[in-house]
Image (cartoon, rainbow, N blue to C red; front, side):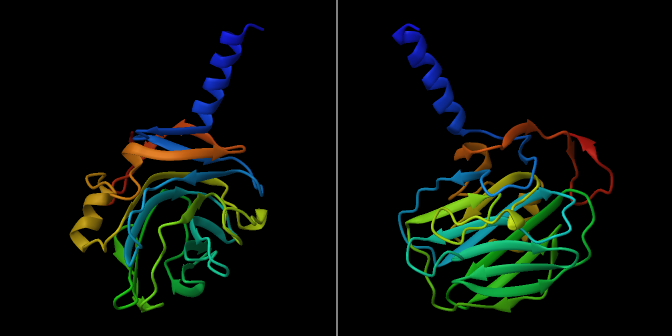
Length: 235
């Protein structure tokens, strides 16, 4: 094989594994239970996070607990610095500073679900919004700060910085429209996010810096559902 051909093939492989691109009307598809397949998100944090909001859409028929978003810090015992973990049929756990906060939700159904979680270090206030509905608020880890050196993983839950995955906590299904902000979204902002009119300033699905590890596919999003309508539409 000629050197220029080898170099071209290598470049193609690298571009497939790591990219920054607009993923509008695309999904990450996690096709099977595994302890290896995941997506690494690579935000640029210039200052520690004392407020944050994370929004995403998920689609799965899992009946066991699974991670939607896992943020770990490099410090010991900070692998669950900020984690969104769904536990069907009717609860969602938000971890802040390794402290679990379980919120009872409506029963799960097999359809696209829009989830937003906000947290404010000043008050410790956690808000969980699912499909535009705000669930009872709780308080956790007042005064905590998330360092600039973080590991953000989709599809797995980190038991250590960048790893320690357990396949029984992995996502089997689809993720889309993932955004993150360094402030707390207002109710009006949440509605704009649900209609894809508000992009994150830390993680932006329309300009996503990510790396795929293992068996994860990027596929077209074939069905969409706006929060104010009951029917599905073509994306």
